[in-house]
Image (cartoon, rainbow, N blue to C red):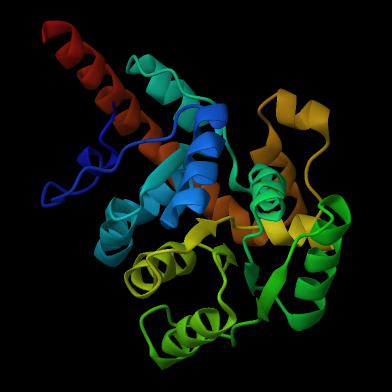
Length: 260
């Protein structure tokens, strides 16, 4: 498996790998953890995250502490396969509904953290309509400039503790959501934390996902950039810049595996 920290500076201590390559097995593991009272923290790796992992030691450390990492983006899938690891494409936004369905089935109270109050209410209503019986324990809109290591994060953790939430969808954006998940997991070991980026925005209708044909052509990144070029052009340029190094890491992993 590719160690994505190998693409980061050489002082990275803990490996960062796609640990949940199969969607069905991932959902089965989450259901088992619900039944056994074990928490988890799930991050969805894409090239933007790889760029951030290289630049942000705190993000890298938080990523290394996630119990599950999926491939969120076709480049990650292709690079893993180049390295000899078969993985499914598992975007965070596509995990929201099935995991919420598992929570409804097993009676796990759910918290939504991120966005604004009205958007959270819209997302919660959409989830409850899809999954009758789903228990929404908390809707938590964080303040602007939310610090995942500051006092406001402590307040959110206290609120999640008081509500008894066993599943928390985090829509705080990277790296805030992954850093908060790593910290909150220490305080709430029976709660599952899913970092889902724009997943709640799609449910609330505040963002529109690319048409299915665009997704099938692996051009969702272009769809997003056309919608907000000022914010995303630089981000995607950095992602393209890291591709050569990522390809070399994949080939090195494949060759090393063959030698072993």
